Image 1 (cartoon, rainbow, N blue to C red):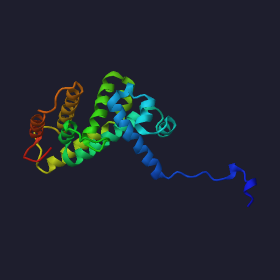
Image 2 (cartoon, rainbow, N blue to C red):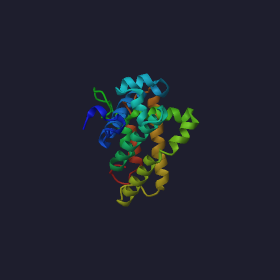
Image 3 (cartoon, one colour):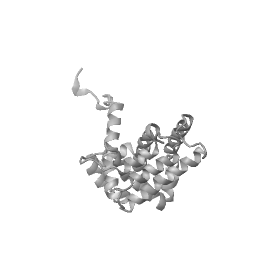
Image 4 (tube, rainbow, N blue to C red):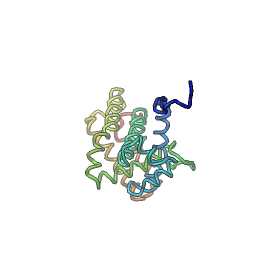
Length: 210
């Protein structure tokens, strides 16, 4: 074939694998988590997101429609991580993770890195009705995971049986939000482990973790 006469429009476009797309999406979430945590939602400008992710705005917004969609995806991803912890260890463990001191490394491998996103979600829920409506559609996973964990613990005889599971779920979620508010105000967390021990003990029937 004479390459000099080949119409470029007839050449097949290279296909991007799903693995590559997934890896790029993880890269964006990885970098933007630190950016939102450091600067807040309003302060996380497109330029700062570009610097944090190492990608252009075109690459970032190829995967996410706009900054709010990116933040919602990040918050949803973090809620999914928390739900996985709840399924295995309970909601109190999520609280312990939030107050744990992160290691001296960059990135989001340590559970306490989820705190930055959670703080910003809490702030925007109070101040942004549109965000509150959009987040309501995405925030059920943690509640469902907590309720299912408590139901399993009750079936195993490890959870107090004099309070409805929905009430216990709401109780633990309120404690979580109170903890997040405490941390958002910059108050110390060094002495909170005994408080979480008390919360954990308050829902137990025996000595197993709730």
